[in-house]
Image (cartoon, rainbow, N blue to C red; front, side):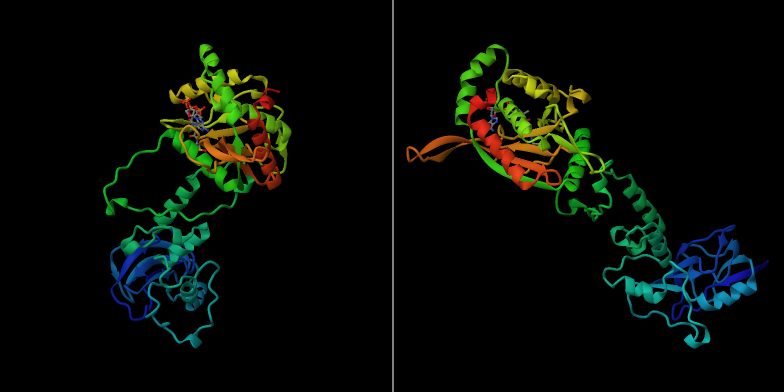
Length: 441
Ligand code: CAO
């Protein structure tokens, strides 16, 4: 064991270069090639590697100092000076990352003097560093930070640097990894593994005009995470169709007063629920869920139907249980009660669980069609838009007749449901809704 001084080696034409990082402290064990400090000029940043292994006794330099060839970096208690000195001959050249590709310092010794070094695994040599990061796309980071990021699998192009001139520091990499790990994951969905999307840029919108920042409601945060998972994990297809509900609406209106006497608002949605259950019975694959690992289809023998309900705090989906066992008036009563409680934030968690299929009706608001997002692990959702009077050709009378047409938008999970079945399902709904007598069967 012997105390050795470690100096900044020949760094070409650079003098009085900024020390931007100090990677070691007294007491650290170091190996040959471990980065001791990082220097940065206008043109390049470079790590100064340890010429031998040992234990750092004292660090003689700090961030913000200026360094040139010969500046003392540290005192090191060397393990085996002879052995390490031999290794050092091969690898003590500073590891440079080009910021601008010009003016990389030439090697301090003629290449023939030493055998060509084989850089230890994971340590970039200057050429590799330049080749890996094309100018213009090159994230600004020192070689040691690059190595650190590479070891952790962090993509430097996605990390913003907080150091001078936007340089990415080790702390930036750590914070990015921490943030990535804390993002909500699609638990239990085998198909969600390996998703990698580019981070949203962090933009200061106030540079373009006046802004106001509001926190998202709790419901929006939760439903947003679920919607995002469902959108990216289930391959969606939306089948559009139209149902002639002229007779159904006539019937509904004729029953409205009677329903009102029983304290019920008889809405179209109650009839839609009945029609959906009928279609689910005809096409059982729609009343199913994929197992979490995606290897099995779980068919349900019950018919609990959810409906999207717009509340001041965001979207919630209350569930009406056993719709197959209830009549239209019972369903309408429950719809009214559940949506009123949803808007008063009085729904219990269990009243939003166990759904087999969801209906999202925007008919009371407007629109001609939309693409609803499946409420996974359900495999389909029915979107309903505003009905309107349309001229429909009657082949028997050879005339156009005004008919009330309801637009349907069925989104389904293509892993479970084929396109042909998607079209069959909406055709079935169309038939059920166009002849109200069938719904009562
Ligand atoms: N076409 C034309 N008019 C319609 C209609 C349709 N498809 N559906 C409903 N209406 C009419 C109703 O007849 C009612 O008119 P009257 O007051 O004159 O009777 C009016 O629109 C309002 O209906 P409603 O909202 O009281 O009742 P509903 O059963 O249609 O809807 C509910 C209940 C809870 C679904 C609804 O209030 C709601 O929250 N909708 C928004 C759902 C949503 O946000 N979906 C998007 C989720 S993202 O996929």
